[in-house]
Structure formats: structure tokens, C-alpha cells
Length: 201
Length: 170
Image (tube, rainbow over all chains, first blue to last red; front, side, top):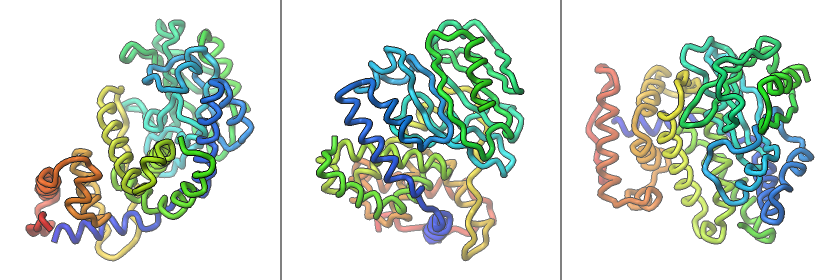
């Protein structure tokens, strides 16, 4: 029967799955950060940075078009640097993959599906990071060249400026990278410089 | 927000239930990475509403996961073109790998709500009433969604895949 086949397929497909051993610790950090944010809208970032669990950190500051939520709005509105932590995902299946964003602390700007998205027709095996910002300085550009083979595509989407960075896989694969990109009030040249710093670090 | 005193209770829930919840999330989104991200978010929301959720934290988290998946499906079309993400490679197990893979791929193409209904009914083995409680809909809706999902699956599956009718009222 189809339902029996479904049961078997569901069971088999998920049998070997297990959550990251770091999940409880991550949740604990998010809860701690959330409690702290209730006391101070600016307290989360140092705490997260000190936690040291992230493998990649991108930080679009300022507003990102996401729905304002209690405890986060002020932080973004003031342009303080926001952190999103993630790890480079495996690249062995030949698909166009992005950078897995494993959230640590709190979700700010890069949902995982955004970070994993590659533009249609993108070459396979590339890492992509999307940074969304309302920053007007980037809105006029259509293509922003970034050093070290990374290219940022800039487009307008729902009134927001979307910047898609293509990162050569070799630059990220298996490495731990820390970077903080304060995009708010940044010029494209500054973004390029920060991005170079990310790749070279 | 969960209090510090209640946090050990929540952490125990995470340790014991997260493997099963991850499997549930995986079946909803078809991708291990997304499933982990959604699970973390769902558990975080559960913690923030622990006073409400602690009665039945598993059901609360599953409902949150379903809602997150629906949210994600709703916003996907507003984004620029996306390269298709493949279903993670099936694990080895009994039965032809091709059949199981075809079935999972077909499930992936179902609307989020129908997929959630199938997973709750046939992976979590929940009753119609329990499924309705999680999806916050009537039992009749669960039955009809199950029926539609199975019918859609039959349409999506190749002709040589043998199928039979199923009693959805079970």
C-alpha cells in the first residue's frame, strides 16, 4: 500500500539523521542573548562574539527589510552590527550551494534559505552569500566587482537592495572565517574591502 | 520567555526530543541543513513560550515547525531565481532505493500543508484528531488533505509504481 511505502520511505530517509551536538548550547546562547536583549538592545553582539561558535559571520547592519520584531528593531535601526553565524556546507554533490547559515545567538538578517540560494544559471559548486540591505549607496549598481574572484551582484527586490556575493569554494571550504561587515552607511568600495578581508582572513 | 529555573526542563526536552523533531523537520523541507535551522528556530520559539508550551512541548514545536515551513513556502516565490536543491541522498535500507527516492521526491512536490499532513499521519503516526490539533484545523480537513495528498502522490508517481487505495479515516 502507498501508506506503507510512505512509512517505510519516511523512516528510512530519516533514520540516520541526528541533530548537531551543539544544538542545546546554541539554544542556550540564543536564550541568554534574548534575555540580555530585553535589558539592553545592544548586548547581544559582544556576547555572541565571545561565544566563538560561529564559523562564518556576516553582518549586514542596518535594516534588512525583515519584519521588525521586539528586541531586534532597535538594534538594526541604530545600525549596530548584526551577526549571523554559519558554516560552509559540503560541496561534494555538484549542486549550486550556498553557505549554510547555522544560526548562533539570534536570527538577524540572513535566513538559511537565502544564504543557500544561487541565482538561476549560476555555475555549480559555488558558494553564495546574499546580503540584503536598504542602503541606498548600493542601489544604483548592477554589478560590483570584488577582489579574489568574488563577484557581488546587486539587484532591487521589493524595494530592497540585494547583494549576492559569489565566493570561490576554495576560499571557504573547510576553513573557519570570522568577519564582521557593517554595511550600513558603507560605500561599495568599503564593502569590497571588507569582503576581501573576509576572504583573506 | 522561559525563566532560568525552567531552562533545565526545556534542555531535557531538547535532548530527548530533538532527534525525532529533526527527522520531522527534514521530511517537511527535504534538506538536512534547512531542517536543522528550522528546528533551532522552532525550539527557540518554544522556549520563549515555555509556559504555554510545556504542557505538550512536542506538539507545540511540531506546530511551530509546520508554520515555519509554510512561511518559508509563502516567501520563496517573492525571491529571485533559485537553483533547485536536491533531496539529500537517501540512506541505505530495505526496499529499492529508487522507489523510496521517487516517493520522497514526489512528496517534496506536494503543497506544504499536504506534506505536513502526510508526515504527521504516516511518520509520526498521529491520529486524525492529533493531526488536526497540531495543524489547527478540523478533523474533516485532515481527512480531505490526506486524501488529496495521496491522490496527488499517485498522480506524481510513475505508472509502474503500484498503488492501492488507503483508508484515510483510520
